[in-house]
Length: 233
Image (cartoon, rainbow, N blue to C red; front, side, top):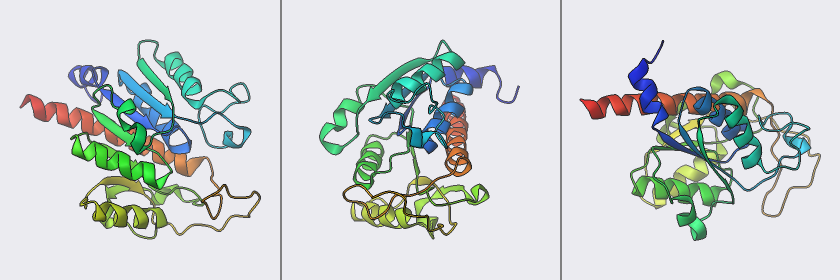
C-alpha cells in the first residue's frame, strides 16, 4: 500500500548483505526480511550467548549455543519461506575479503564492531561501487531518539566515529553514510574483564541498538526503491 507493486518487485529482486548480526545487525535483518527483500547474505562468526538475550533478536534460551547465522536464518525463513539466504559463519577481514564477495550485492549494511574490519569493508565497498551504510557506536547509550543517519563528516561526540573518520581520511575517503548518536556515553559498571586489545566492555540495552538496526534497514529499503525508480527514468 505504501510502496506499490513495482517497488515490491524491486525489493524481491534485491540482494543485501548484513555484516554483523548483533544488537544492530539482527534488527536490520528483521526490517529487510519483513519488508520483502528477496535475498540476504548474513555474516557473523559468533554463537548465541546468554549475554545476548537482552538485545539480539536471534538470542533465545532455545538458540543459545547456535551460530548467530543459523539462528537468524531460521527466523528469516519463518517470516518469509521464499527468501534466499546465504549464511556465512566467518569473521570478515582483509585477508579473506574475496570469500565474502562471491555474489553481487545491491547494498551492504555494516554492523561490524572491529575497527580494522569495518575500515576494510567500507573501503572495499566504495571501490566496487556498492552502496554501504555503516553503524557507529550504540553501546553505553540510553536515548534512542538521538540516533540519526548522516554523512560521517557531520558526526560528533562519538569516539568510534572519530577513529573511523580519521582512518578513512588517511585512505582518501571523506564521505560515508553512517548511523550514529551524539549522545554522550554512560560509564557502565565494570563487571567483566575486557578481552585482549580492548580497554573496556561496552554495555547495551534493547532499544538503542534495536532502533539503530531498524533505522538502517528502513534506510536501505528506501534507497533501494529510489535507486530502482531512478534507473527506470
